[in-house]
Length: 202
Length: 158
Image 1 (cartoon, rainbow over the protein chains, first blue to last red):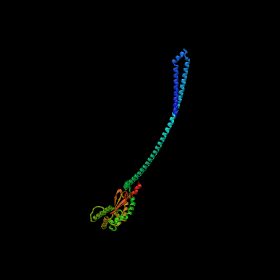
Image 2: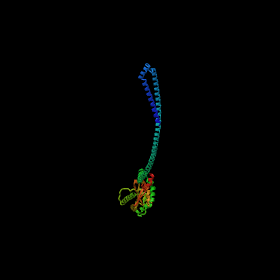
Image 3: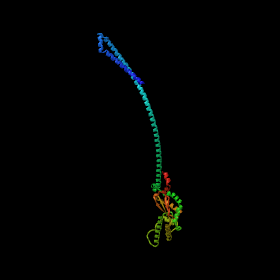
Image 4: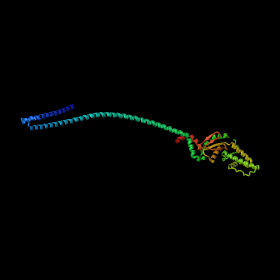
């Protein structure tokens, strides 16, 4: 509705400009060389208007035409300015609505993405924890197995290793006299078996 | 008991080798005195008597210059050599005579009064000893001690 009104105003302004232009052309034709010739003949030779009057009319016509042009230009400028403002306002409103819709959709998309991301993070976190637990259990299992393997290896060869070490370390420094207490204690512990075997030999 | 009464080895005679040396010493002395008795002049002096032999003839109240005493003593020593029980004892290092004397006394007090010890050295046993009688072996070595408790020892070490 507003657009139709503006269009009507615009058409009226154009019509008035055209009417003024046509009237100016008509006056110019009427006051042209032929008319002046006829008039001069009338003045001088019975013409109605003399040259001064014609000049005055011309000046008035020019002034009026210029004023009309200025007014129309002013009106046209005002109309254009008004239309521009309305168009700007319309675009602003429309753009605002569009932007609001876009923002709303973007917010929804972002919310969905965030939710999806959160779920993904939860799944990844859960998977990492599970894997960490499995790795930890596996590590402890392997550690225990390695410990047992080393213990078995060491147990199997421990006596030989320690004895060899003692032999290499003490060798000639090993005093049998200091071991007699241990040896006699063992002899006493096995006294019956030893004595029986000795007497059996006899 | 197969050994004759009154014949008992002193602590100085601990091994079959020492007994053999003493026996050879008595044989040498016997041959020397017999040769002199039969008028053979060898020109040699009377063989020296070792402290161990001197100790045993003093303890047994034997006069080796008398042929009967010598013969009987020879027979007794030979009998002991053939019949005395020998216990083999292996050590990680060469034992001192004092340590061996303690061991011999224990065997002679608890087993047979003329028990002899055959000493061996096996460095791999490190400490203690291994006793071998006629039919049995008694391992009192450090190696055996560690082996018998190796599981507990290994746990403490690891």
